[in-house]
Image 1 (cartoon, rainbow, N blue to C red):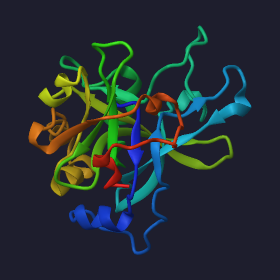
Image 2: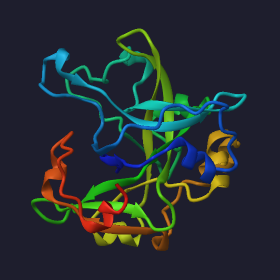
Image 3: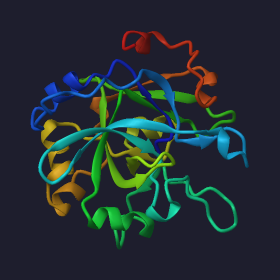
Amino acid sequence: MCGKAAVSNLSWQNIYRWASTLEAPATLPADPEQRLNVSPSRLRRKGEPESMHWESLPGTYFDGLKHQSCEAIWPYLPSWSAGRLPYLKNGSLLSTANARLRERGEPFAPLYMPAWRRDQRVVVWVSWFYEFDQRVHPKIPWAVLPCRQAFWPMAALANRVTDQTGHQRMSAAVITVPPNKTLLDIGHHRSPALLHSPGAVKTWLDGDRDSALGLLRPSPDELMEVTEMPMDIKIPGNEALALPETLQRRV
C-alpha cells in the first residue's frame, strides 16, 4: 500500500520539464507546500468533526482538452460521502487511500469502478513514500525513493467532490500493485503504481483504458532505493524528523 509520503522540493516547473509530453499551463500554480510526513486526511479526535485535518497531494489530470494541475484531497472521496471522509453504516471508516489492482474480473473494487469507467485518472507527485516492515514488531519504517529522478509519479483514480466550504476539489486514491523484490526485502506486500517515463504519464492521463491498464505493474528494482527511517515518522503530521543523510540531500 501507500499510506504515507513526502512532498519535498517539488516544483511545477521541474515536473513539467521532466514530463515533456504534457503541455504546461501558461501560468504555473504555486509550488506544492513542503511536507515530509503526509498521511491521508483524518480526524485528529474521534467523534469531533471540528478536528478534521485535510491532506492533499499535488496532482495532474486531463480535463478533455488540456492537462491541469491540482492539489488532490487524499484519500478518495466517493460521491455519496458528500465531501466528507467515507464511513460505513456501522460507523467504521472506509479506507480509500489506495485502490488495489485486482488480478481477476474488474480491475478495481466496485467503489472505484465509476472513476475507472469515466477515465477519471490522475497522476499524483511525491518526492518519496514510506513503507513499513510487516514482519517485525514494532514495524520498521523505510523511505522508498527514486534513483534516477527527483520524484515519483503515481497512478491514481480520481473523483471530483464539493468540499465543506462549497468548493470543487479533486480527490484521489493511489493505485497499488504487487511489490518488486526491493519492497519484498523490507517486508512489504504492496507497491504504489509508479510511472517511469513522460510517455507513461501521458498515457495514464489521456490514453485509452487498455493502454493505461498495461502501465500498472511492479516497478523495476534498479529504479528504486530504500533507506531506514526513525520511528517518529509514524506520528501523523510530525514534521520534526531526523532525516537520514540520503534524504537530507533531497530536502
